[in-house]
Image (cartoon, rainbow, N blue to C red; front, side, top):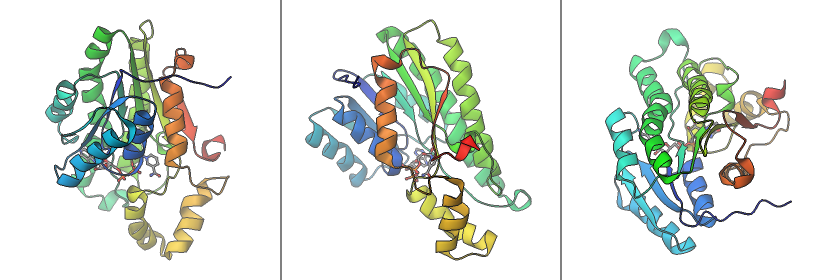
Length: 261
Ligand code: NAD
């Protein structure tokens, strides 16, 4: 049976959504009828134009709210400032690739704050609003690296494992309510976050770009293919549908079989 459900009248907040997966998920949610709140730490004309473009294309309300997900008070402000909060997609994330003994402390702190702590702050602020509305969906964009490790990514892997654990814990807290809390664990998706780590990975492994793509990145995917933003959008829509009421506290992998091994 096809899953059909309009998100008309619902509002989705997507953190870190002025590029890559976050922007794609915002488009998909708007295509499904949801009003959307885009976010990042910048406040440019282009950021606001992205929201205006979504509003025009899909006929929904869309706005951009600047908030730095490395700062707890701004995470909470984003949720409070949004017109409503029915769907929360915790997507903001950064990466840094380095051996642990050379890992810059400021990069460690930023990755833990943006990739993990922001999820704590936004969920803490969102749940009371979802309870008031009598419905809610929290979707945390974790990673295959929330389930498996790779070298030189200690901060990212610690943060994403933390997100997976937090997802399970909060799902138990909300289990008797019409609110679900899940994590999506993508393998590799060719977005700016991956493009940015290719030069460091080339350096760490002493490889050229094509070899890094083939032998370090896609070697993890038994399918030998990247996951796509559109595919992740489909999973988000499925989790928002009423067919998924009993799906809570779990991880959904989109990694071409990586974590099956
Ligand atoms: P991306 O670099 O295109 O997107 C990251 C987003 O986070 C951007 O919109 C950026 O503006 C935002 N951001 C960064 N710092 C922020 C801050 N301080 N406050 C608010 N927003 C901030 O990369 P992406 O691939 O689209 O990544 C999105 C999410 O998906 C991340 O959490 C990432 O870890 C996760 N993920 C990506 C992949 C992949 O292969 N691309 C795989 C698994 C998980």
